[in-house]
Length: 286
Image (cartoon, rainbow, N blue to C red; front, top):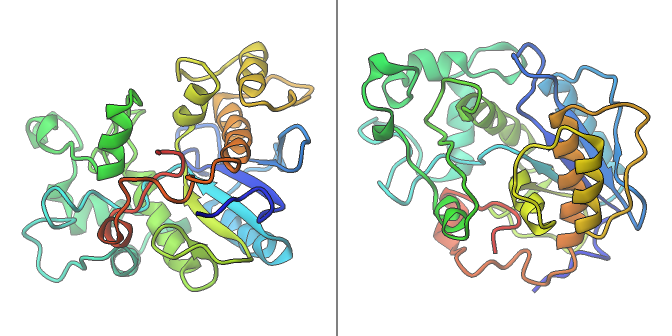
């Protein structure tokens, strides 16, 4: 089993859902290193998805860093034996599927509106006209494992409507992963290297629960301080009131650092080679 404490110089959490042009408050990036308080990286910058990609590649080459993204690295596969059942020519492994999504999407800044709304429209829920939402809600093995532990993950990669939907962020993220493939280890699709940077999937609620909180969004500095204290981290002096994307990033960066002390972090019991190739796994679901 791999112990991460000495492998990475920093742990970086990227709240991906608020991309430029979305209805949210912008992508937020935070890092935790050593025993220092977690800090936001360029909090005043409006990050595009492509600027995050460029920054990550530069940072990964500069020092060994564990990067976390809060989107699903692949759609559910195990339950039905396919990502998009009934569609010919769709790959059956995550890396090939990333390339497929990228090749079928012509939207700017790694967007996926064309893929979701035109190429494979029937697989995604956009509203009541599509029928019963429950028919679209499918989960991966790690999502079901998280929910069995009380994780309350309810959003599905096939849900494309509403404030809580994750389809757009996740499929856009798959385009990003395709561009990272071969340049940086993407766990668990790739094995963790003995040295160098890596990318993992994150879910903020895991770390909020590890901190002893309910898992709800943090919108006050006092709540942020309590979460960081619960993770054994010093508080983060900001000088301004953070939004919930920024608190998510700060808590998750500190949580990733705390998880590094657990030798099981990269060896969860439910992760099999087939699941690693097809669905992936969320870092922190043990």
